[in-house]
Amino acid sequence: MYDGTNFSGFERQPNRRTIEGVLTQKVNVMAKMPEPPIIIYGSGRTDAGVHAVAQVAHFDFPFDLSTEAIYRGLNSMLPLDMEITKVEKVSNDFHARYDVSGKKYFYRMYLGEFQNPFKRNYTGHWKFPIDMEKVNHALADLVGEHDFSSFVASGSTARSNIRTIYSASAKLDQAENEVHLEFYGNGFLYNMVRIMVGVVAEIGSGMRPESDVLRLFEVRDRDQARRTMPASGLYLKRVFYEGDDPEHPTKLPKR
Image (cartoon, rainbow, N blue to C red; front, top):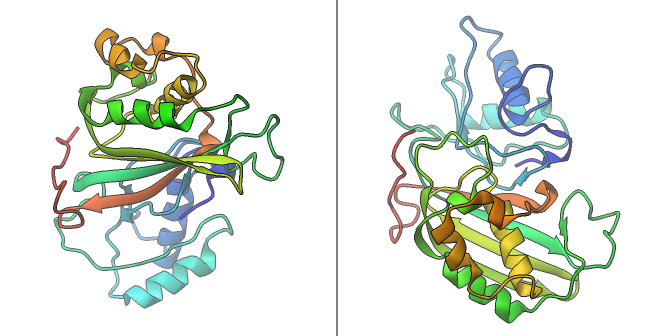
């Protein structure tokens, strides 16, 4: 898991602090800097500022250390905004990215008139009145297999914008003055969750018709979806692999 606030995303980049970069460096130090170096394969990228409760990565380690030794060794070296929660041995043909059958994302949206300074790194901000019935109506329209071309940011490298959303839900946390949204699907495009949240929030606040999600599927125009919600509210909640969820076992094609 990691707090994405001070990272430039998951993927390694030159002269940038990234999850993959930090983890790669620590794994190679633990392995006494082998040649060629050990490569880290993550289940997918998260953008700068996005958090993860359950990111998954794999690597081939050259020594026969126990999972407990790797778990404790890595955590002793990692910075305070990263933690390994579990280490296990997997088969040689397992791949953290290509074997994914589904993912869950969670979004926290703070509803105060102004952003709470203690939540600014961990929530998105929505200052407008919101109707939860309209929000959940819009979320229901997202469920199913659709072309999400209106919900993908430029820069995406996906071969297809067709994805399946298995479930999408929202609830109001009155104590925290937040709306919590959860999305479960077989895969997500670049900025897709943050764009979906923006559209749903606008529907909930009466800025769009309640059926506008269906129109956006038809027009396939990113510009008409408008806003992308802040990365600070987004969390990768869970990554699914074959057998984790027998109701939704389908993998995305390799790309």
